[in-house]
Length: 267
View: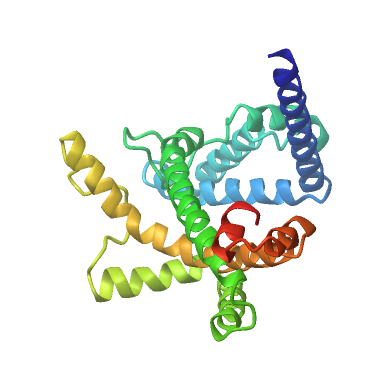
């Protein structure tokens, strides 16, 4: 048990160290170039523009209004740490990222109304894992079956077509295909919902919620599978062809074993 856990612990510590290093380098690069300061100041300016209208309804004197906005600007700069140098803000920023203290969103909300970015991420994380896992399983199963089959038909029309399909699907952006499918499948044909994971209002029964979730997941999965399946099939085909030239496979052929058995057991 110790021999199994030890490499896992070492890898976990290594990954955590790499994460810390990447976060530190990211914060340093953003701070040293002034990008983070400019981004925060733009956020302060935008927030002040929104608050100016609110203050103008209660403060009629222009001088008093400007004084209030100046004080509010200084307060926001202290809140975002703009009154300190970027290297002073480095440790707290890294700590906030590690603890998922990423601030508040302006438009997005969770189901219970929270605008905390960490809460929004945690709420959507299970659905993201579900979509990625499902699409990856489909790609793996289809890729292994089709790729192994194409390895036995090297140079055929289907094999040449696979090379073109793999190149095209690899080059197509996921977001572009997603928008295209939403426009065609959801808006034009009205076959699948354009967004969300449940209907509004959501079903109450467990089985109904499961079916509704699967129904809403069809379109995102249809977007991710075509993008990944072409390169995966071609990779499996290439690796299978390479493995088929190994000595143990040649020995199996010399023994007179059927090609299907060689593919299943030796390749």
